[in-house]
Length: 74
Image (cartoon, rainbow, N blue to C red):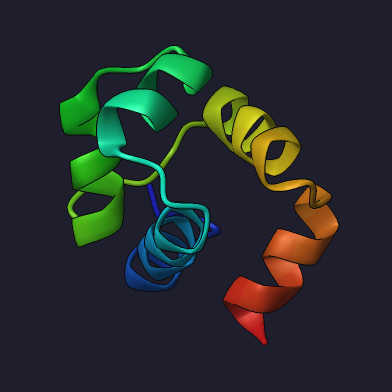
């Protein structure tokens, strides 16, 4: 099954948000209720966030899913 999100672009967005806000992976993982390794896999593009995780990410980043979708798909 193909993801609606471009793996590297969503990973870049997550990494940029985390770096801009000076968040360690452990802190972000704790906020989202996922393992630290999950954040790393999202950022590297080897895995994409689930829909549940995307909702939590959008809340964490203060963005709607629509805004994230626009960034990811131009």
